[in-house]
Length: 249
Image (cartoon, rainbow, N blue to C red):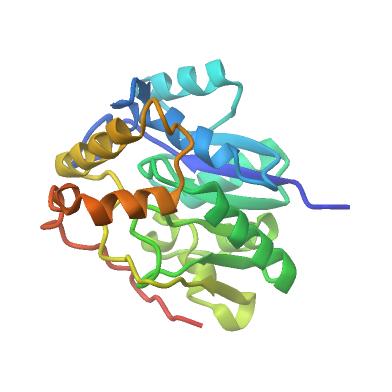
């Protein structure tokens, strides 16, 4: 019997640098909807669950998710690891595909490759590479619900609780971790939305894609950005994030 695979997308309205960003429109629809629609097209994903914090300020996210027919799970805002475990239990997930709601360029083919690699190697955890490969914003992680529950039971480091997966990937000798890289290396491209400049870049790409190519993939983005380096310049000055304790396998 195949494992039930659920894409769980964390989202909140209270991001510090760009509050309410996941409700900002891209080609006429909220960013959250764009992310979930793209992730939901991943072959092998059985359901989509939006994991949002408790509290009335986050209700707009629940409204979007309910209208689209996605599962809604609610939990602690800053203990995102616990929120993921709540969502995994509620959605009946055996395997969790983790995506964040500020990544509107997530690619179903890339997600499917990570899902397939984890299953083929029978490891608890697989992901796109952190420091090389796909642009920041195409990141996807796949982890078994069992490994998430172990992490939830043991993790005490606030970083491990806020960022969900570090308890697992910091311990590759215990869990087994698979990393998918790619070439050419586009990791210096910033395709996540964390600051106003990121949103302007996302708008530029979506405006180029819609309405002619609504299901654009990463090769399409790559071709666009190679021909339009001015788009990449919009947020090129923003520093890349760091991942505390990352140990490549």
